[in-house]
Image (cartoon, rainbow, N blue to C red; front, side, top):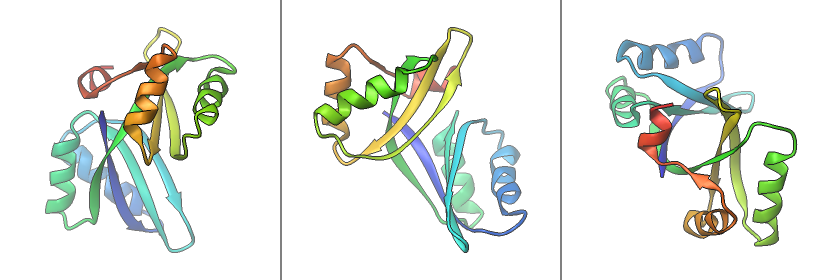
Length: 142
């Protein structure tokens, strides 16, 4: 499993820079970031190279933060790959709560980050269909 840092924040100019500066100050590298927000508040989700260190830095800065385990699935970086994986999960009635991705290295691979209620079942389904799920050490070394 991979750990995602979730930062809860006001939605106002300059806030994202303040948040990312906390990670920069402790030399934590951001591998992926996504934001879900409305007019007033949002959640900034990070995949970083050292989630525990980043989590501690946010806590020490007084930021509302949590760590969540997510699945990191390797897919081909080409059209239709994400849809093919999602079709498999749909067939087995897996409810996906959150999904985002990023390119991984020069091998035409992408990493898809998934959050769902039953991660263990989703992991089993994906592995049975030949998908590679990467853990922290593999992901953070990309």
